[in-house]
Image 1 (cartoon, rainbow, N blue to C red):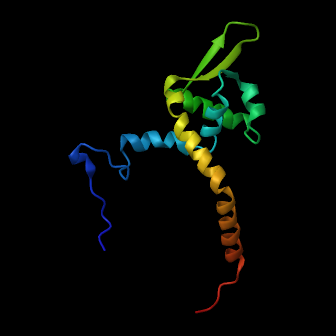
Image 2: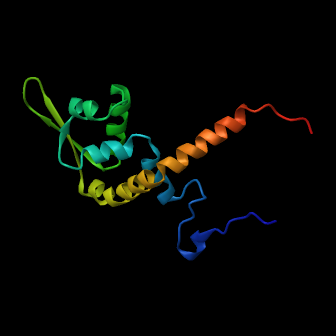
Image 3: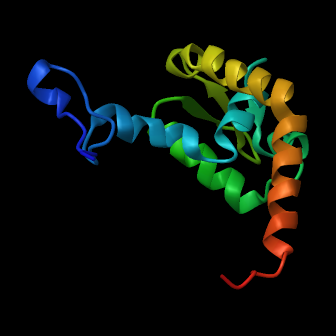
Length: 136
């Protein structure tokens, strides 16, 4: 069976199976566990670091810092430092970040609709994995 995938670059398209595909590198943005939640927390407007940390249960300070830095690097979030003592820092979605919210909301809706199925599947898989291997 031929499992070779066509190289769509010669037709002017991208090939997400190729490591250097531009859209594939951008898709990495959404593979972080926390990206969608941080972006969702910023949907209603700018927030300070500790406010985000309190909102996102289970997110460590280190991981929040890394996620915000990555989102800022990708142009999805802006970081504004106000010249006060102590300095006040706020994070906000950019227009680019807001343009991705529909995609993230669709994923969130799908997750909400199928959470029970996914969790049941995980449980069934884990139970099968506990069973002793039967000799052939």
